[in-house]
Length: 57
Image 1 (cartoon, rainbow, N blue to C red):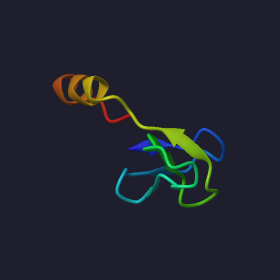
Image 2 (cartoon, rainbow, N blue to C red):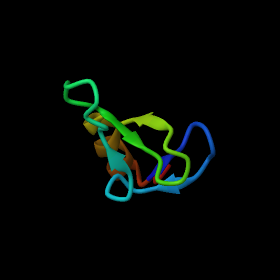
Image 3 (cartoon, rainbow, N blue to C red):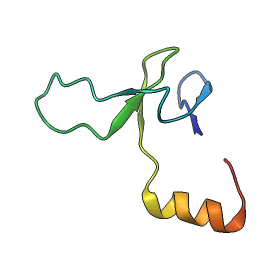
Image 4 (cartoon, rainbow, N blue to C red):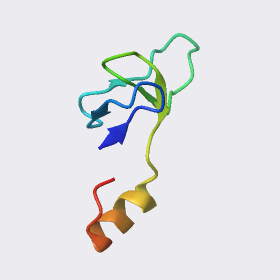
């Protein structure tokens, strides 16, 4: 789950809007589906640690 840094809405990576494509570079941000604020993607290592320790946020 990703928590938007602007509005606080929680959503999955699949629900978020991936990269706007306006700059022509591969985008690593995911936009909030509610307010469209760009949030950074959670690093893979952090995801793995959350699975090991059973944390969801």
